[in-house]
Amino acid sequence: MKPSELLSSPEKWCQGSNARDIHGDSCDIFFERAACFCVIGAVLRCWPEDYSRDEDSNAALDLIASRLPEAVGSTGTKLSRWNDTEGRTFDEVRTLLLSVNL
Image (cartoon, rainbow, N blue to C red; front, side, top):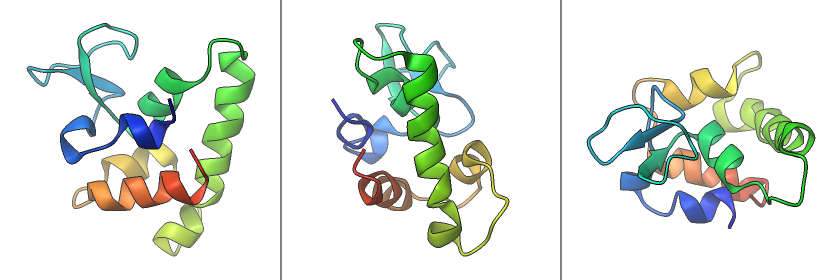
């Protein structure tokens, strides 16, 4: 599963935590009851088991972050800060993931 597939609707995306359960409480991204994820949490949750999460998920996160200047019109923005910015929309998050084929 790709992160863009995991984040298939606004209800499956969150801010302020890598993952949240159905009650909105922060939880581990691998918690079976995790119901929504931020961009980083979605990448880490979806990265294939047969790859090294450390190396490959970092490469995926770097790829996404490399598109941030294009997406937000500036440089120096961290992915977590971009995801958690007040006013950020699900459509912006999904567009960013799809732009890097994740």
